[in-house]
Length: 147
Image (cartoon, rainbow, N blue to C red):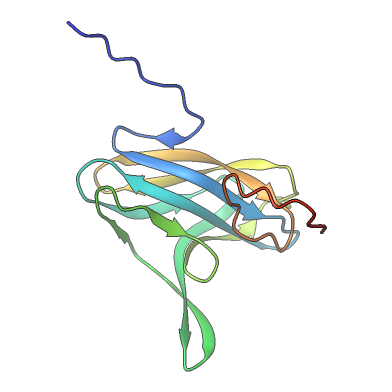
């Protein structure tokens, strides 16, 4: 009998769903936004809900452009195909946090729970970046850039 050793990873995952790169911008107001990447390693699934203890309400939203005007609408669910990462990022799908219970300060982390139709609930820690931060890139060390 072969022993299977599971690697210890700092990613949230169920048996089939893996969540990477969860981040948010620092926010002092009433609303916040969470971005992340979902990878479905199992059968096709759907993201059907989101929640976080730092906000009264969390919803999946989609940003889109209509006639040159940026708009946003709530999305009931998001389909996931096996092996195709779904990126929630600026200008597209994202998680909207409304009525924040505390400011989101740079360097903080807070939990967000995603509910999937098949995989159930997966909780991930969201890292708070500086205000106006762009999408973090893995290993894109850009020397000589100053902020």
